[in-house]
Image (cartoon, rainbow, N blue to C red; front, side, top):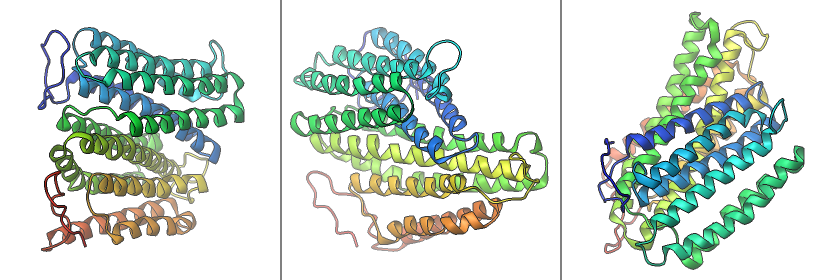
Length: 413
């Protein structure tokens, strides 16, 4: 991270780190994550969790597009900084109205305001990207294709906001499917976004995942409420912290550094593909998984503190609550597997089996008390993290450096 004093916008240097201005943009992203957890958790239901997933996808598209922009050109100077500030305001408004994303209260229409804020975010991004791409041959033609595809996706987004209810959910799913599918087709025929600085891109995604992990700690505080000084509540909070530490360990201890090396060693289209698949797509699953885990931890602490009308330290999680806790962990692990695979690293059978184990334990987690369900999850994740470290310590473990474009990829067992 650095403090920028540069003038006119220019192509990002290879060693350009994340700036304080980009971190400031991420703080608005944090606020939006907090609002989504609040939207899903009062109390959680299948409907609120599904709608929360749509909001997370919307939020991720917004953030990811500006991560690419900051990799193309410095985001903290000149015209680009002014545009990003406007986008930041739109993201802030979107975050404010997210709890009313499917309802209309006093004042302006919440769903329509959210949809228009998202459209503004994407339009500003595409305009700034087009403006900064003048020196890159062929990039502006690709941006025009992306813009046309995005505009098609915005139509059902706005229409859904006007209709509301089930139609809104269905049309928003269609909007995101059009945008993702259309952009993937555009990538296949015309190429994707060129990656300028691998370190900057990997750093931005690592920082945003740290931010998401921090939400599980915030959620624990929300769930504990005024009962935070009770020993059972403190104990449950520490168990929730151990789950967060294990998720951090499973990503940052080896997987993230190895993927960044793959990104740095690759060149051309292969590097762009790793950035698009391993980072832009796989990290969506990682962040969504962490936010669901945060929701589950919040529900555990609420039950232990007596927040759902139950006696303190009593009761088991509801099906939505235990699904958020265990299903969110499984989703995080799937995102981690895809992250490894897309960054040219081996996915071992034990890592795939861990996802199955977490899902198989979901009914048991429902039957146990909330604290026991959280403790069981913490134990499974801790055992998995320790086993992975022991596996890497063995000679010939298959976790060697991936091949570069001029090297033969090592055989993974």
